[in-house]
Length: 337
Image 1 (tube, one colour):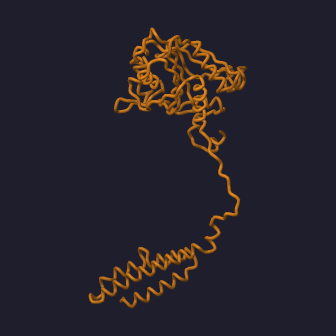
Image 2 (cartoon, one colour; image 1 turned 120 degrees about the vertical axis):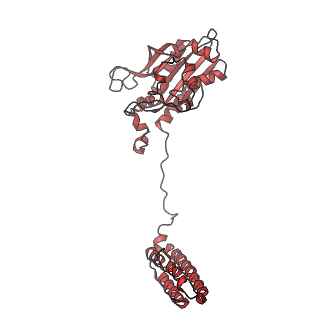
Image 3 (cartoon, helix red, strand yellow; image 1 turned 90 degrees about the vertical axis):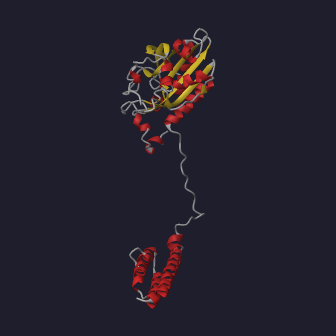
């Protein structure tokens, strides 16, 4: 093969490009001449067999072949792209628009935002803290004994640094009290982590809203009245609240509290398991030992603390039977809210 042969092949290639009827045919021509196994690589491979005196001209013709065929392929591709088949896909400003539905907030976000609004009306502000906590803030400062089960690796995600993924948002209360003198009135919504086996009512990742009110002469009566107000704002005007004795290391006395079932008005139904009450979470008066740890005078101030699971509130409020539905990201489910 010599330079004259390359000139002839160039004309043949340009003619095939011109006759390509669609983009598929044009791609076949490109592969035939410029593809990895096409004619151009063969020409370059043949260069070593050309006589030394003919190599410069042979190389120039091969380069011309590459440039002209490449340019022709590009130009023909633009022509085919602007043809009738492509024109049909262009935007037609005379066609009525298609409305894209607006998104909505996730049920968990809705509950957090609604709870924040309710407690804000009672004078609470929102406080936040890190997801990765120290053992001191998560356990020690909350008066949790060294042998408490929650400290075990079976219950808590411990890190190699000795820190942990917080098991509750209570450490936020400690951090606020360390920095701020009384009075303190905060809520701490946020994500928490525990080594729970995932099932219909448990998840290793979940959300809490905890509250803290510290001042002079704060009483259990104020705790009950504030939680009753919250329950009626969140669940409906007929909801009541009850306290049951319990124990938590960081409150004394401690209680668990229930909302009366908002669906059956306390008469008993499937949601409340025919008891008329729905268990929410725990609360109580802040233990004086906690005040001493953070530098408050337990003789001068009192306070209450409470907590609640956001997912649990969402499941009760919206009638969700499985917590996993909140994390599956299935739009068919989430669009209901």
